[in-house]
Length: 167
Image (cartoon, rainbow, N blue to C red; front, side, top):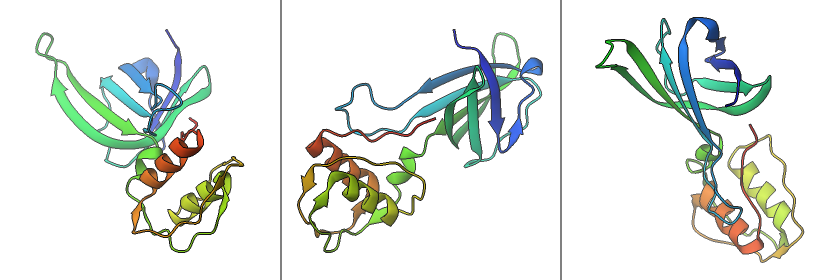
């Protein structure tokens, strides 16, 4: 079992000693060839915890190292029928999910390396912090607008690359 050392929601650290919690983190893909999927984090919080807002930033650390960084995407307040204790289920998604919301129009993109094409897609989507690599040549491209996640997924599947976010 991993020791969670910090949970921050909306810039406020939870007092982990004063709340009961459980954390489940997934890191998207199961294999390197899977279509890109966002990391997710589900928090179940019992105790005196404020109700988070949708889209608030969430950071979870284990042993003092980042394990998840993302945004609140869903909230489910509830009551345990056996004990009557109130709790909140906080669902969060990592930054790869945002790529599906960013529309990019490939207009007259030149032939270039796969790393340069990934950087072009991310920059067109407004993503400013990323790292790309890849030296496969990809053909020039002009097409209808598409979401950045689909463009990156297609590029990754045709070049053997992976799209992921680091915690």
